[in-house]
Image 1: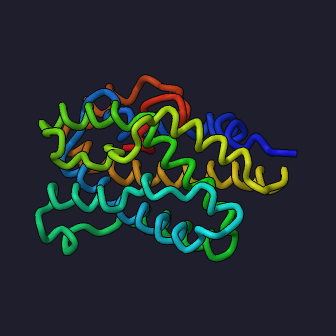
Image 2: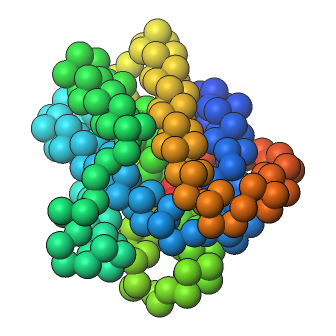
Length: 241
């Protein structure tokens, strides 16, 4: 019997998604308050996270569980490298370094790939479905807040080789539902997805320092007072930022 993994993940990560959207950094981002130093540090952290995930998934393209959801058109590492060139300059690779929270995130991805590769499905879902669902909204926010052009440091949000993102997401969910897993494995994947949200939240929390310095504690507190709720597949989420 097939496991409806996509639905299980959507339902099983709702609380974690809401918690991620209510971190201070994300709350401010979604309200249009984006600070340059924090944003480019986020881009840097994501470069290392996606680099690790895409490196491991490429190695596992023939794995029965991971392989069916490996799509080159989803890869973000090269897009992020272009954005780092814009934000840091041509020598970005000597300036962009992962934060401590990003290092922990990267380490977890490598650990999962080595020990329980099927759990990489959770990390792919958490990142890519969010990217496809809320990417254009987040791109518009970043462009307006930082006065960026269409290609100025926001390549991360552009899926140029995917003509119909809605159709692609439907296909991706169908692939997830057809994976050869049992109920116990599905539950482990959902648990790992919640862990991935937690890793994202630590990245966001570490970014708040520069933001608070830039806008002040009073304004930061005002902007982060109201709570939000959300879903990885339902709209803008800074897991996709």
